[in-house]
Length: 324
Ligand SMILES: C[S@@+](CC[C@H](N)C(=O)[O-])C[C@H]1O[C@@H](n2cnc3c(N)ncnc32)[C@H](O)[C@@H]1O
Figure 1 (cartoon, rainbow, N blue to C red):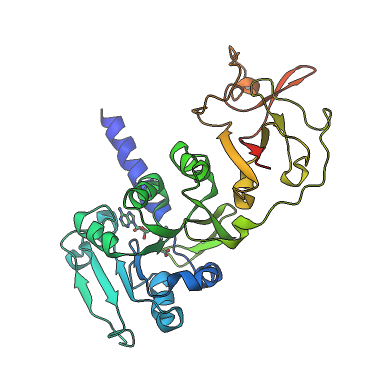
Figure 2 (cartoon, rainbow, N blue to C red):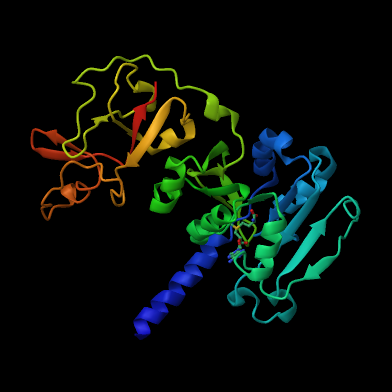
């Protein structure tokens, strides 16, 4: 029991640490440049943003007129009592509201929240309802719950998230249903509370705003042949190891790398499923009696290719089919 609860608090402390990454102004600008027309006249809500330190707050405040925003709301989470227990003032959340009236004030008034500023709290949900578009970098540890709330409230959003999240059952389902897709840029580094920066190779933007590159088709030049595109043993699909090599003349199901999602045009392809986590789409044609050998541990869910000495498991693959 003791171990369980200490494991839990260890995990919580780890989550808190892993959630404290601050987005750089330049990265926000690089992505937001693409959406100017969609922000005009809108109420923007940054619901994981301490106005004192968030570059999202700075960006929208500085570009308030340029973007033609109607209102900016930022709410600050009290963070963790691990950090701030000793400081009762900083233990409550607060919000900042910028409108045409106070946009040029050097120190816009901070308004105390009743609660801690949790994005799930009733008062923050009221701000969410008022908002047209939610734009922020939310806590990575609560990503599923965060996205779920946005979808339930039928909100437009542009948020930062780890590329791995696209393989989560809940997020992948939304991608498959064309309710969420990737933005334009990747975010390579974030600030940390101690002032240092941490580099990431797999973090980008997720959105349901219009993204022009979603209308671009991947140009296909290769022709299908059995040698280069082996069939999986457990999915009725062929393995395509590089997106640029998707054969132009294959009408069946193809397994492509997860990065396909960054190139996905729903007019060109249909996403059928993913060979990862659990095959909730029932696409696999066979399950193995998996032998106690790490070489085979992924076989049941990942695509398996027969080799001379058994099977080779592939990486997680998105199963796609051409639409035309
Ligand atoms: C990845 S950081 C990004 C901070 C800021 N949005 C930015 O981009 O610089 C996520 C932030 O969410 C805050 N946070 C954690 N749990 C939260 C919750 N339940 N509700 C609102 N914010 C939360 C964390 O304190 C952290 O500052």
